[in-house]
Amino acid sequence: ELKVEQNPLFLSMQEGKNYTIYCNYSTTSDRLYWYRQDPGKSLESLFVLLSNGAVKQEGRLMASLDTKARLSTLHITAAVHDLSATYFCAVALVYGGATNKLIFGTGTLLAVQP
Amino acid sequence: DAGITQSPRHKVTETGTPVTLRCHQTENHRYMYWYRQDPGHGLRLIHYSYGVKDTDKGEVSDGYSVSRSKTEDFLLTLESATSSQTSVYFCATQSPSSYEQYFGPGTRLTVT
Image (cartoon, rainbow over all chains, first blue to last red; front, side):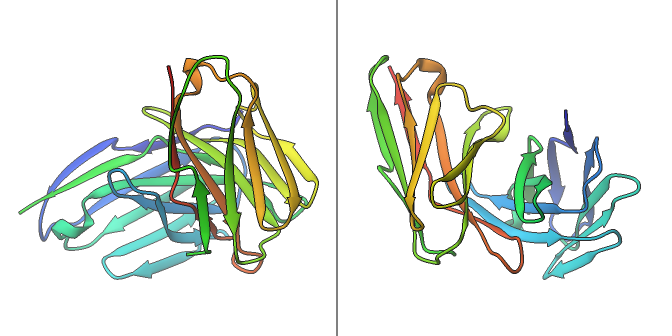
């Protein structure tokens, strides 16, 4: 059974600081997704990482994937209040090359304080 | 945004009644998924479809069935609703090129 663990589960940080959210998973996969969810809203796709060593950046967020360590990180640079949300990682179980059954972590609630 | 709508957006129903949730997409994506979101569990896959009339089970499929008679619509049916099926249900479609999964706005279902 594939397990996906995120830590921390809750992160309170000050504006301007840097921090990293970790996503560990228990079985082989080379497809890893990051999502953002605001309260009461749907999930917004942030990154899809499709190979070992993949790194993607968008604004103050950067995601990376190490498939050998079964670890993905989401790094936040110089946090701003607008980044406050819940962040989910999800690992894909791939079938037939294209069906991606996503197994989600339980999420990291990020609160950026002024 | 993959042009996904879900209906209804909110529903309250009684235990034992059947309920059908609809997901409609305008992007002609082949792959579609139904997830449920519960506090402390993140999202869990219920069923998915890899084409018209082609569906399969996910992690938590007991008590649910699906149908897909045309590319744009994916229906989720709770055959006899129970209180444990109170949840927020999300539909997703998958881009064939990037493998991104785009989520619909969700349906909040309460079973009393």
